[in-house]
Image (cartoon, rainbow, N blue to C red):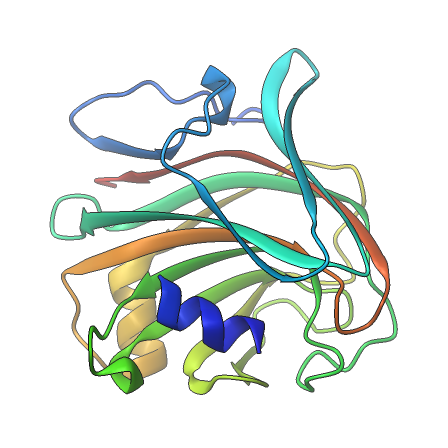
Amino acid sequence: MKNYWLLLSLTLPLHHIAVADSNFPIGEFSHNSLQGWESTRFKGETQYRLQTVEGMTVLAANSNAAGSGLFKEQVVDLKKTPFLNWSWRIEKRLLGLDEQSKAGDDYAARVYVVIKGGLAFWQTKAINYVWAGNTKKDTVWPNAFAGNQAMMMALRGPEAPLNTWQTEKRDITADFKSLFDEDITAIDAVAIMTDTDNSGGQAAAIYGDIWFSKD
């Protein structure tokens, strides 16, 4: 039920964010900061900590049969900054899971964007950008727990190498239009999760800074 609960509750190897008018920072891990981030726990507890990797402060996540995440409630004006940017890498991947099933709804790394529905909880929607262990890159499917309220998109799949930084840039407005056929102008929250509670496995990932940009 973790995805459903979250919906209701809420270039170089690594990018260092220079705050400017065209950038809107969300996760400033390289500044040794977790300001504004809150934790939510589903089963057990994934360990999140700031640590130095290759001379840069990053957010490291380690999960052992656990599912907990970090989220930041922050309204982002997509008319000004529609692109979500981040970098990530995984150190342990999850293999042999049917990621479209409830038993296999675990990922070494995922980044969510959420639009809240207020009292109309059925209108709350989210996109889960995931580093999949068994699903081909660019595959899209509804979440096993939340159905069409939370769409999954595999930005990286089993072909992606371990211990190698990958950088991402997503046009959130375009993705919501494509996945939900909705024209949106803002999102309400961003979340991170490395989880293994359904499968009972182990996974480890590292997240770099997260920010929205004009282009």
